[in-house]
Length: 111
Length: 142
Image 1 (cartoon, one colour):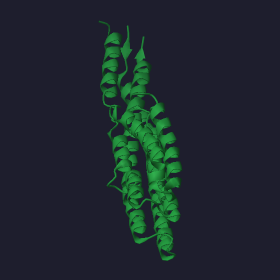
Image 2 (tube, helix red, strand yellow; image 1 turned 30 degrees about the vertical axis):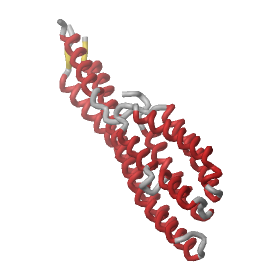
Image 3 (cartoon, chains in turn cyan, orange; image 1 turned 90 degrees about the horizontal axis):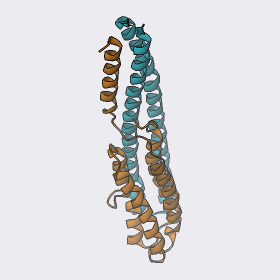
Image 4 (tube, helix red, strand yellow; image 1 turned 90 degrees about the vertical axis):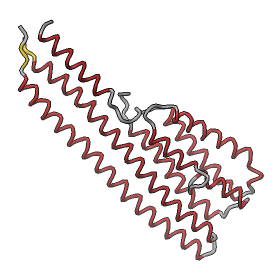
């Protein structure tokens, strides 16, 4: 006769899912923060370099405007990428929970 | 039906329901390779922009064809809207990245080397967003 220990199943799933969420989303948050900081620094440096090139007459006004506006499009691309990576992290979490549920279900079944 | 079988079926149903909820396309090696190779082609082409546009039409067409193949490949993938948006930002001639660069080159015929060097940094970073997103997608296919 098979017995299913529901409380054990729920407790095991909760604990493992919490642990998985902490690991996965902490990694995602750290990467997103680092990426944003690096982009902002690179954009700031790029605009400063472009302004200097314009002062030195190595580029014209139209070039300078294009280089500055390019940062806006790049910022949007960084944000889109982060949205995509967040979706991938959510999918990874869901898949991880599935595996946790399967393992916990078998562990909670005693013959 | 035994209790064990019932529980097994319940888990299978739950698993299938969750799998159906994936929010973004899985990792695709071909898409990754196309994004990295077209990045290299685009940056090499940009180096030629200090020369007249008219002397580079064959090269420009060839690179644009490869980039459009990569874009069309990504367009054909399910749940890949974010990557498609990234390509569209990169290729929009009215935007400020690669599509605009080609248009700008055609308009001005030749571009300042210092401008090209600075623009290459941004275009490289733009391609990197597509590449890094592909790398970050889940490898399992679910």
